Length: 479
Image (cartoon, rainbow, N blue to C red; front, top):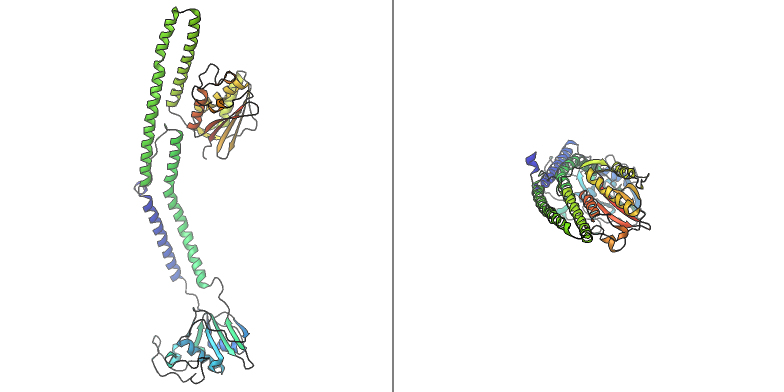
């Protein structure tokens, strides 16, 4: 099974097509030989003569005939062969009328004239007619407007009887009336579907019922690795630190998966190197800051207070950077969780310290897949910002399509213009009316957005008539 999964997709698809074709042909052959052939539709010459004389229009082995009248006989749609001429002559003699007063030919080019009993011509079964002199019947009576037919186009042999000749398929026969005009007899058109068409539909239905389920299962086996590949690529985009892709599947997908794993490995090294460098720089900055603190002991109180304030802010920035790096480098534990329950915990924690925060009663329970601690830190950060700079927070959990949506509204002055565009820039700080973090360094929103994007979601800010709205979207976990 594992070796089969390594077969290229193109080879598997060709094998599927060939197998389906072979099965369909096997079904066709089985149906063709298992069912008896349909009975041919034929009209005995005696039945045609009776209908032309005004008698019964019924046929024992054919469909009912239709009788009409016309001023001129209907023209033939093709030239008549020897058997058709013989049959027309026999019909004329049966009716007791000249050949010129009788017409008999196929309604279309598919039917033909034939003998029901070859022995009536004095011929052994399976043998063709010998070449003899033209038959005596029909000679001299004329054969339509063109006169008698050429001798070499007439069938030879003994005179056939009307009951021995038949018309197979649709036909048109006409007889000149003594008072003028023609009596026209035509066969009833073939219905749809006929016997052969019903058999063809049966073949198609049987082929579909047998081939379609097998083809669906086989095609699903071929395309299943494609779905796993797309899911793995999506996980890589959301979490470069996640597990590598399994190399199961066709040869092409195996090569693509290996290339994707190599790319993920390079991304990990790139992120680790850059993160380690920033972390090392931030950590090493503590040493010169400590020396500056020590040297400030001899400075004047005014100068000491001003510089210590700047040093404290720098140390806070360094702590924020180190915390951000620590969170990004730690492996994330993903699990299915109820987003509404997680947001309720964040709201309850803020309410315990006396904050004005409310969870909307219309909130919906939505299941997502993510890191509980990271998501709790994300919503805690946004709720804290709403409380600090908007005075209150109103939270609502819902869904839009296949995404979970969390809305966090405040009633503060909001952000406008450049502040709104640059709110997610690291270390960016708005004016005093809305500092992103009182005493902070401007890493709260960048960390929140990085966490949301790491889960396949996003964080955006929208100005309201009153206050600011933070919108968090996260993909809903598949069932």
